[in-house]
Image (cartoon, rainbow, N blue to C red; front, side, top):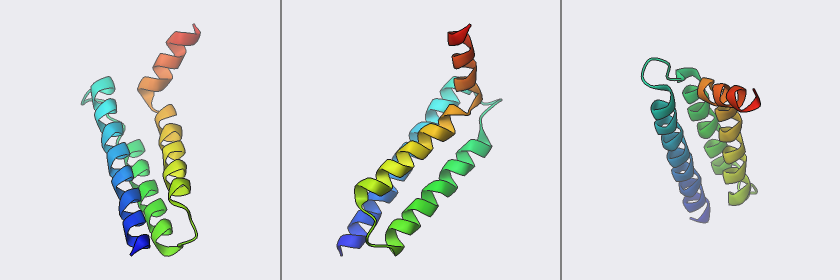
Length: 91
């Protein structure tokens, strides 16, 4: 029962982070240049981490949540609005 609850918690975190990423990119980039590839990579990565958490009970909840959070930051760093913001910040 504990494994199912922890897997559900990881799945809820994945959905919330993916949804907030989608909303933030929609607001920043608009409808014309929405990063569908990055969004798809985030969804697939979340599915993989959630399934690994369900399959292997020795993975801690904080490890699964933390690894997906770092993955989401890494994916977000390589989207066009963030790269443009970093270019403007540097120059």
